[in-house]
Image (cartoon, rainbow, N blue to C red; front, top):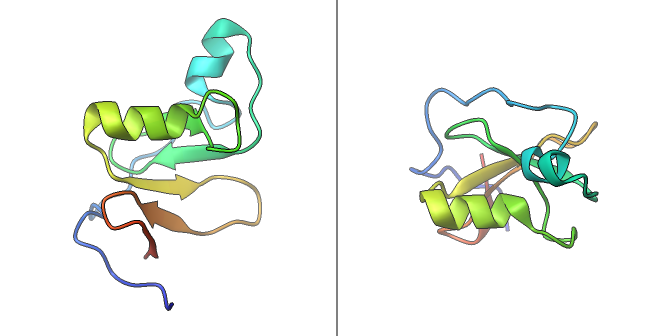
Length: 87
């Protein structure tokens, strides 16, 4: 499926609060696998392959549906509301 436009993607993408780590894991001294950015507010959370899944927990708690990978070399966004890659 081709990448589609999405009305949930804000015009101005937020900058990461903690670009080098998951905000919640850093607070507790835990580890993560990959990092995801909430494009709505800048929260950095760990991916669903990480045991804590902080990015998804944040998206659900705050109602912020779109995340973006901030892993080096990755340039994609995902809309949790539509369950698809968006751009």
